[in-house]
Image (cartoon, rainbow, N blue to C red):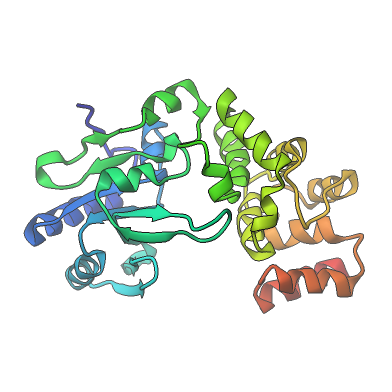
Length: 297
């Protein structure tokens, strides 16, 4: 049994996790810290991306938690999630443990309440399929059903099952982002499945807006060029032109350039009306579209 220490996290988040666990004990619910924050703990990196999974009714627990913490809560019925905004800018997401089934390639999944194990098994990569108990009897105890901790130690990106890229092709973009951010390698079987998915043109099952939502996260990286280069090598760049000119313009924009500027750098050779139409297709908010068009001009 491996027990993680939270000392790498800011003290206010450490205290928040204790309070979440205590409230869950009072409510008779099992709660877990999940996802990227657990991966980052194993990498000894601080994270403020706090996701809590509840075995049971996340809405009921989120309401109790919001009252206790004097937080504002926003509820998303479709995915049974609640976002809590706390004083000082802290926030956390509370999610019902769930399973997912895909009616077809590239469509959003149908979800159903499930156990923590089923919730773990629905995730994208083994390095993100980790959970840490927050109840008093298992506080800090790592749950690892898929050897995710070993993959982190081996610095590997490994998919959860053979249809992962078919079910959700945006995982291909995530694989590039994680590989570069953490300096990990995509394992051989995962790379084979990724290449097969690209050869089958799985991106045709996605709307441009869903593709761009993940593509934007790449543009938001400190240096988006390495993951973009990796996507190009995989043949996985869609909708947005990526060539030597765009690469040079992103470089000229400097480190930490806003994603809108990076996108404008890639769209620079496109007629303005076409660029704006593409931004509308991507479902980019009006204020961001204005920044992009101003940069293009």
